[in-house]
Length: 322
Image (cartoon, rainbow, N blue to C red; front, side, top):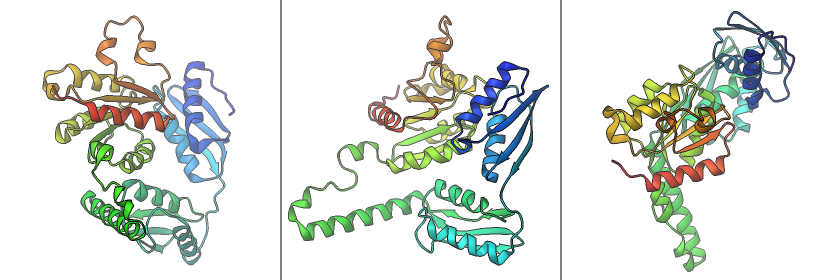
């Protein structure tokens, strides 16, 4: 990436956030920084990359305003009929929702999506995919997310159908476990609370956790996360550090573990996930308060999903309330 920032520390932080974003892999983006204003310039292939660069820069502490002088190469002018064909081709090629589950209409380059999907991630991913099509001027997302009860019913019916089919071929397939047994039973419907202001991270992590059988709730700030903690009483928390302030995640961790108003939640495991490479012990090696902000596990972004899921699984199965 090209750089022209006289403030080396600020410049390196912006660079780090841009390079850490998978959407910007291989993209050259210029940076200029002055008085809290970051200017991004260069050329990208899609509008999604343009938005990703803006979001990445805004996550850097000390950045007050981002000026986006990035040019994207997406064609601007297409007729509604041409856009409609492009949307139809995109929906046919995607496997984020069952066939015919999603409908779309196009008027003045604005696409309206309707229908129903199983997960919030599918809803958001379909919107991003359509928004990135050439000529699309905007997306109105009216897709509904089916309630968990309906999804669980579908899962049970599909599993039962598979069991019946297998049993018709081999009676010994009775050994196949049905939903809710052994280790699956131990984590099925356990609640995970994600507290992170990064919309993309929550959107990517949610389907992974839901695929494991967890019920997932999301908070975009420490304040919202603590409110959801009381409301949902989760079995584990996935917590970011830098949200409204540089240390907000540590403050949330400390509040849960030491404030009387959250006493009943002190046994809730906290998995801290951050782009900051140092663990609390590394970052504050001599601070007496480090015990107050140390999470139960710490992962850096991008997350090693196998290790992360293993840690969450072990925590939710051994959690003890105080």
